[in-house]
Image 1 (cartoon, rainbow, N blue to C red):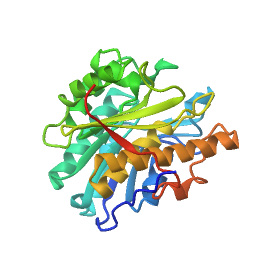
Image 2 (image 1 turned 90 degrees about the horizontal axis):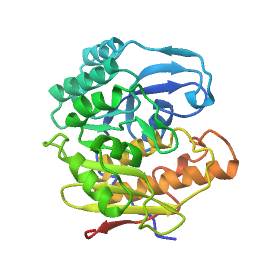
Image 3 (image 1 turned 90 degrees about the vertical axis):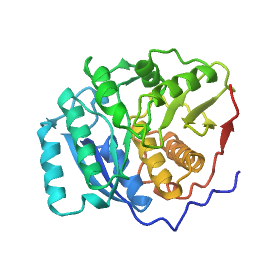
Image 4 (image 1 turned 60 degrees about the vertical axis):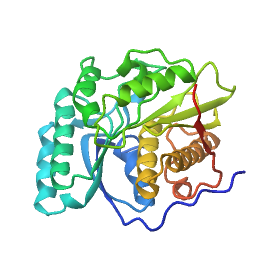
Length: 304
């Protein structure tokens, strides 16, 4: 077991605006992202784009999708409190319509007008290897055109990286090339971090899954054992985006954030696997978020 990496304790608190879906039963969207960020010590202002009984993977659900204008209205109310200058990051996940994409980008721009240092972390939720594209067909192009150019941090899974770049990713070199191409389309004033999740490549060791972080300064890989989660658990992408953003804001280090976020996610998934539940055990694993009991290192990629 590797000794835990100690997160910074000297960084002042940061407020985070999280714009995502919400479910009452289970943990996806804001219901997967807000609690880990709170356990890391952040105040989270959540704006919900939908309110559903449960995630759509069950095949049936109740609830409603909120109009895109609702996002701007809620930002109006937050702005009226005079607190937008204290917002250090915006996090977005599933965006169900073209209007929602535009509304999220509009919110990012309004927060940045109050605080130029605000980071935008975009989880470009569009699909995965098992299901293909599961959003409206026009959304990938809209996300690429509107959200990606505003993003400081992007957290696509392997399938979404291929979709956004038009490149097949089956090797480490292919993943690096695609991530670097995507970096070139991001906001140039920011750190330009691409975090590729759920990376399974031909030239990797067996029985593992990797996450790759690519920046202008270099690239890092974090490898964890591959758990037999069948079916895959909804909400893991939302959780890793939140955990990485939180640890990056606290440490300022991509390598540290990658290591701690992936270690925390592995503990969450291991607990979920042991429990044999369909929903991720977000509350039960809460002590792992800030100080994972088992830490998997982030190793710098020299060059592929």
